[in-house]
Image 1 (cartoon, helix red, strand yellow):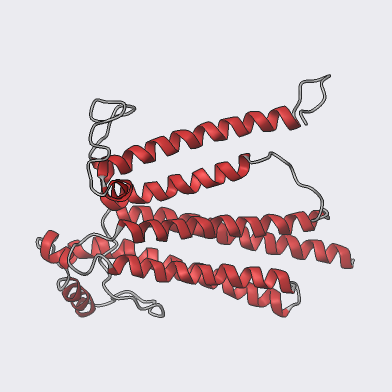
Image 2 (cartoon, helix red, strand yellow):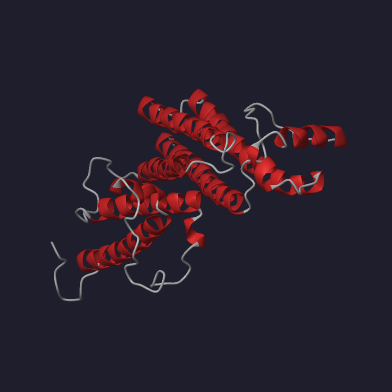
Length: 295
């Protein structure tokens, strides 16, 4: 009975963590929608404990008046009325509220499991680290927004990249810890060797993060609007002007053409690596009948 209870506890913790990971995934999607609709600078204050949106006409007028003091309204959206402002405000509000909801869905069950004695010390430290990373993600989000509230009504592509990359790292780590709980629930030996595909999983993970980061630079610079044909860019396979900025290394982060070109190359490299890893895994774990597995 005690063993069965332990396995049920591990499964419960695993499902809780997978739910949190799914919520982080939705958070990334909401962040992308916020970026595409240019809603991210509609809320000009960061109040982590503030939950309710404006509920009356006077509160909406106050929120809109605050927005009017900043560059996005003064340089881009002077045509806006309160009703127009509400359209962009609501998406950013939902984005921020969802982040707070993730924090609650993570923290409340963690405390419940911990008080019941289901979480041992190593797992507790992992969960504390994940919670701290989630909090840092929120701080990074405001740090990113703040960069668009000064002179230029656009967030820094560097801060956007840090914000997005942190979200993906958080998502991956939550899934990692969750899958370990399901292994424990099955009674697997955590010290036994796992599926060995050599450097392939690490290479795929590394390039996936590079693609995400380069995509953030494309989004931060609005570089995707300049060259919308594939595989050619500006009518060329390797377009002229890739390194027109000076110093040369600045092209990787601030040259619209180079940033988009890098994103394309990295994405195609990632797709190739995934295909090769799939072939490697089939050769190793699904060998041709009658032949031994590839060592």
